[in-house]
Length: 362
Ligand SMILES: Cc1ncc(COP(=O)(O)O)c(C=O)c1O
Image (tube, rainbow, N blue to C red; front, side, top):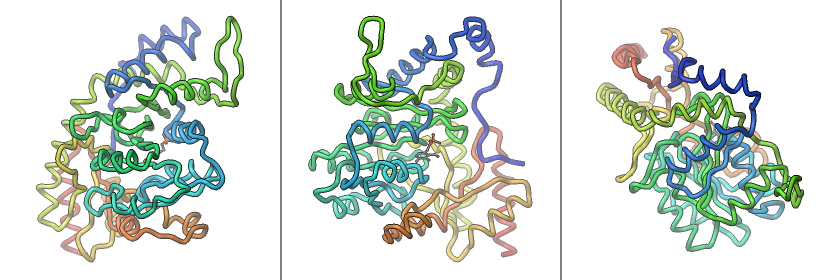
């Protein structure tokens, strides 16, 4: 099976540090946690970095420190994995889904402006499939309205806009280190911020609501354990050094696909000028009149993994039933996009030839 992605890490990369951790017994809150957070800070240029067990818990704790709850609204990009909206729903606030561009797949500034009300307490901008195009424009709107911007960069480690790395653009940025991402710790997540007040609140929330006082914890708030253990942090540290090379390589593979699939009518996800896209997922819109599920089934029968781009959150059964506010472009993208295998060594010509065969016989 040609998989969608292969991990950029092997056991030999971590073997000696794993041995050291097993021998020391320091499985959690050890030196590798510190090192991974520092590496993330240095890589993004953000002042503060915190690790978490996933992007979902990272996003969730960000909403908690902003004290978002019942009666509030949070505006969120419509085209994403449901976690982006679920964390809002979980606080008791209302997720308000904003429609996205059919080109970049990211939140449209005009849609955001239309949806802001006096109840809007935060905006979650999703870097769709790792693409941060338009993040600075969304930040500008949020700043003008004094609304905090959380960037859901679950897929976007290694991406940048206008020369500024993701992680150093919004007020709060959340990352995922799930195996479908370019940098994986098995499961894992992180938050970066430049805001000292947010950083202090995050450090307390992520330590069960405690601050250290002499030799004991003083529980000044309620909080959580969303920690990332040392073994997983070693995995993360090892991959950071390779990230720029991985991003370059994935963009080269993207160009190879575009050269072969454009003549067949496939349109690649676009980036705006000044954007470096990490190509976490390589996504195309289907040629007019061609049915994506039929192509994914055909590719599977030929040993090639593929899937949809991602979801229209407003069109998922739960949110459509509850809020009945389906976003048109988000739904179009959910129905008409396909993710194709992308990693070093993937036989691009074989995948494209298989797609061409399907087109010819469809
Ligand atoms: C945009 C987006 N946000 C959040 C998540 C959730 O990430 P995690 O699995 O680390 O909780 C994902 C997962 O794919 C995602 O794509």
